[in-house]
Length: 529
Image (tube, rainbow, N blue to C red):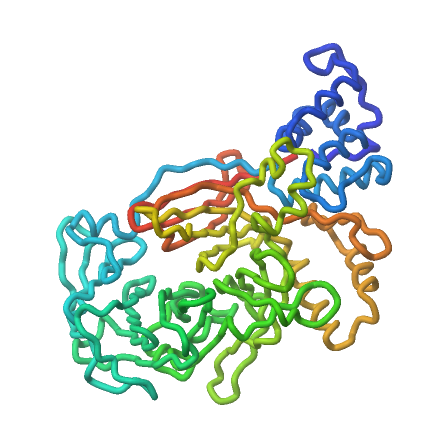
């Protein structure tokens, strides 16, 4: 229901309902509304829409939003203020409606009903149909899809049969702690102890050999968690200390079918367990401002999202660089190794595409607002303090969900908070990547020249693309502050976002967050204005 200033100039008041109020009183009432209520009121009718486009009314609402520098009715035209409010409403998801859906069974719900206890030596697929246990050096695979448990296979832990690369044998006692990771279809099992990883083919014979590797890149740390990702083609290895992450294996290319799962042959190849695709400790984030990479900054808790423009989108925490810790959306360019023909992330190619605010990093924006409680609607935000978070991106690339676990160990049950961020459009992400590439090669003589080109680009696909520009530089910056969705009990083992259609034919995003006990689900619906 976009309404330009030319259209509303012919609107007249009528003597019915709230429209009987004089225009000045309507605008005075709007000034007392919070920003979400004001955003909703603009779509009620054309008379309220007309009353909301006044420069003074918009400026009052904009001062309540996390925008720097604060908008002023005396310095901006009504059209500029309206565009700025539309951009802020889009970025801050003021029109987002959250609908809670019924819970579903978690990964361990069915196994627990059959007598399996959740613990570090028990893991199951997301649907709970297959469960794997490690007990007294014996790996057992169970079918837990029915009302009775069926054992499918057993095999001994391969800790004495063969050497593991250049590292020691995996000689461990039955009480040693292991990290387990089960593939999405339950056919592959990864076991880690300290810095040694083994991958088992659970469908193979019990005496078959495993894929082994001593992870020398983890020197000085120990493995504290693992997950299969990207259709089981890579293994995300979380290390102790400062949120370091390793990615072993090779992710699938954008042309590969999404349903094609990796097999044990993939992990035995040169592009498998022995191939280090990405080491987060080697990445140097480059910001969008002119200049070289920030050598004082580092990233932690990194996770691959999806392929884009000869590389991969990643989400991570950014620390240092004279800034408060916050989350980022970044791009890492990939190249093909000559010897192994496998993709490898280039450490010096990391480009920060979007700054995703945390509680402390957003203070410059939130504490300057007119909200009575200071930060107002954005008081509950992530802390970004090396929690090894989990991320998920919507298929259309416009939404990012963050699951951040509480670090307080005194709690009897772990708590996880869910946050939703609005991301820039894919067109803008690619433009930023190309800008950084040309800047490094000296292709742009000035940043203003590139920004002027963006000014005339097609912006019909996204409201935030209509930036108010002056002399090639954005006059205002809207903070990307998340929507706090919920706090749930337990550790989130799987995040998933899917595009769905609503009952009225509109588009929405379905979010599911799986824990061991239950899977929580929501539907995020964008309200049209």
